[in-house]
Image (cartoon, rainbow, N blue to C red; front, side):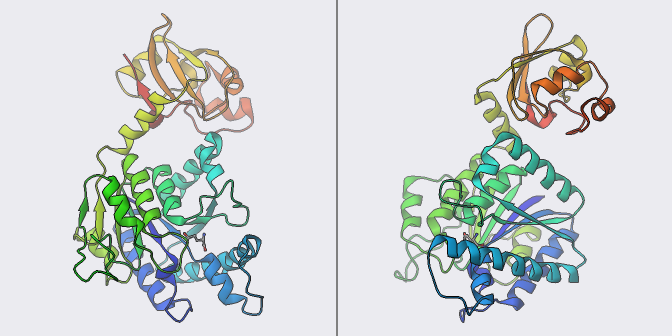
Length: 365
Ligand code: GLU
């Protein structure tokens, strides 16, 4: 299974405002158990600002954004250093990925990030993700790691997103004010009522509260990623959720698969150009659901960047598919008709051997 696991600052911090290393070690131990079982995991961890503050006690206590960005820059190094040491105990190599909203909104950068994450996961390396707070000014920042974790889940086509916080899940009312509040085990659909419940429930130290967690669940489930919000303080929470299939926390059901959601998205996108393909490539796409290779392309219409959505037409002008291209139009013109292993020689670089990978291709007709 491909998993995105998100720790809020309240999973990392002790009530006395120090880093809770024993708990972090315990969480890392659980992730290592899942990793050993073959699960592919990306960890989204908050806490850079918190750790930065711990490590710079002599700095003035300011609340402005540049100051927080500075704390994040200090803390991110320390935080990753701790993760590196803890994961090293279990022989797991980690990688750092710092993202902003604009990285994920730009097609080319989205594809680059997706390729990098997929390669890391294939090599059993564990990406540790945070927002790039240093450049994350208002206009481009995601702002909370709940939403970031949902974007990462979408980026890597995760099967499940697990958001760990200091609450056992979503309750019918705020449990700190209503003793009769009950934990909601399953949310089949995120309705206004669910959003209203989340509105009143804050969580501890991080930026997000329950409302950003619900936003994240909505974003993730819409792209086919089942989401669970559970307590990071619950013993063995990850092992019980993933390996034992226990019902813990609140589960948000995804009604479509991520392949289907990606395909819907491709169908809804505006088209920036067209690729005309020979009969062999047309048949490979429509009948055998194969990727589109440069060898099968005979012409390119329009100017478009890497990451654009294009339509694929056969020699008779019939539409046979739509997809997201790995190469810009000028590159495709240079390599069309050639074998994929010639791409590097012709362009001087390559983004892989497919023009449109079958995961990013919807066959039509
Ligand atoms: N990126 C922030 C940090 O690492 C956390 C954002 C959040 O709490 O959601 O401190």
